[in-house]
Image (cartoon, rainbow, N blue to C red; front, top):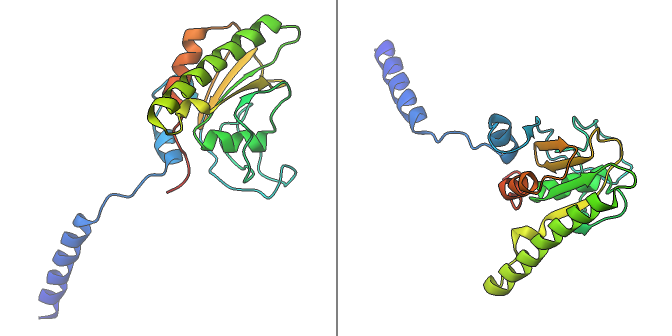
Length: 187
């Protein structure tokens, strides 16, 4: 009798476990599993908040960073002449941002090209916002300098990076279109 009850219990248990929903993957787990899209995938380091820019934290696994410890604050979206601290820009990436950064001296033409490209997205965002009354994903872009990236240009999004040396508008637009506006906060 005990064996029959045990077998019956195991049958019911396996039936109910088969009805359980599949585990929900957070954005960083989904992206770590996906190699699709422009740029190279970088394993994500989570969404840990730190108290300040100077708070100690684990090192980032890419330059510039693509995920990991960050402050509660974000950098304003836009054009920068100074490097945005890693701990701020990572939060911007988590919020669905794309960073376009450059490392070159005397490259005013490249700076102008990159800034002009970003401004074209801001114009697109304003038009979308006027039409819909909501906030456009195209407001989530930053362009600015970054020292020692190993190339002239680096594009970053949450868990993604692309580095190259010559201005390539199509490549940059493809990266932006693939990743801008995708929120990466745990749900």
